[in-house]
Amino acid sequence: MDGLEKLKLQVANETLGREMKKEITTDNYESVLEEKKFEVAEELGLKEKIESVGWENMTTKEVGKIGGQMGGHIGGQMVKKLVSMAEAQMAPVEDEVIDDSKKHLEDKP
Image (cartoon, rainbow, N blue to C red; front, side, top):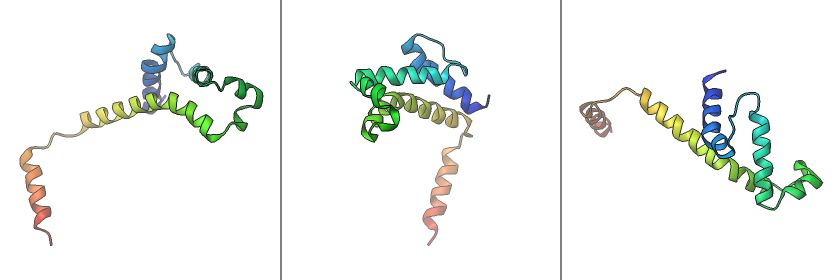
């Protein structure tokens, strides 16, 4: 499992796993997401339509509402973690170096 997959599982457990009170693994990731999609669809009053016409016949707007409810929180948490990881890996830069760089750029015609 690569680093992105590990991050995806970590965030899924911190968000969906905690909310649904179950551990999310590589084996059950897809089924948990499917379960959550139907849960959100039911909250939005769309579950019966999905069951009668199928996902492929839902409007983009309807499917977007479901995805937005699910993905917004998960995606936001992933972005926060990725930014935090990137910041931790960046070498600290002294203020003097930043000031010199700015001055150099300002002096260019």
